[in-house]
Image (cartoon, rainbow, N blue to C red; front, top):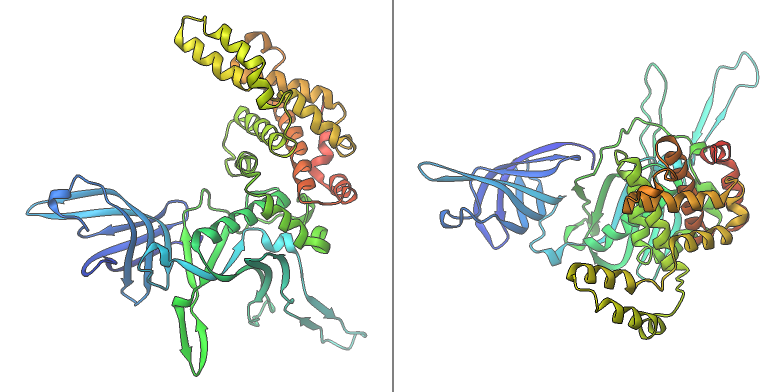
Length: 466
């Protein structure tokens, strides 16, 4: 996933394998995959129509089978006496197989290694025996590959953490054994690639919550019945490597300590199948919350004001989806107060003003942001009080700042936070939301308390000025 490559080869469409075009496939994680064709899949009369193709097949000069999926033409050019060249972008690259149609892109399992996954798991399995006396010079090192660890189980899939290790190669400096953790998703029957993509994304979010850093897939591969070969009476599945564009390319040399994380594997290992299972089950319900919250990790360059608004909206969306809450039911409101409001609104002559009033009035029966923040602070009061001294002030500052940034009400400008004060407010809102998410995976309250009291970044919250 994070490696760059270039493949020369022949390229064609599944419904016209006789027409093969020379071209170069280039992949960079930050830019994605582009196919530079010395020719085109369209003719001259359609030169001005940009191509939109589900599948492009290829065979490299060294014999690799490649499938490009969800492709579109970025540009094309024509030169005399009459040749066309095309530059095509591919959303996904499958190396090692030809899928003839989108419906055929199915897998029986998928393996992924995430950025910082090894540090999060932190499962060394090595012992050392030192000599008992000074004359003995032998040091014995024993390494045992850890057993697979089941982490989720469902009717359609099971997920586990597997481990592999490099073969130690002695050198003048010593012997190194590199262990790597890989998450394996296996389904009861072959499932579409998009199905796996959803699970991979949800696991990535779960790890991001624990690590408190953006994480990315470093390597993804899968197997399918279409890649099965028979050798000496045994079935073997050639792995299919999968590549797609990343929003940011991680520095794989950067290290992070478990002390910097919200929780590590050992914190949840006692019941990880329940915790991760809850996360996966609620992912669809909480999708808007996840998009807003994790977006603050994957877009580090966003303005502080945008980060604040994202966190505020995430908390509001969380409350609406989990705790619900309306002053009146929709039926009661629409048949009562709303109908009375409409009678007044109909007397307004300006159509734009009238439309705006209708939109605002339609949702007046829903809880305000202040009410939602108060509900959450009361529900998690025991935890929040560990690191926030004055939750009422946090709520007031959030309302004033949100209203100023959203409506640009100059009367609120003095109350609205900016600069360092806005950063502190963001950190407190982030803390509130993270506590809510820990409760959603059913982590026991005593365990959450222990994580909060241990976490280094949370310790700074209580020291920050109100």
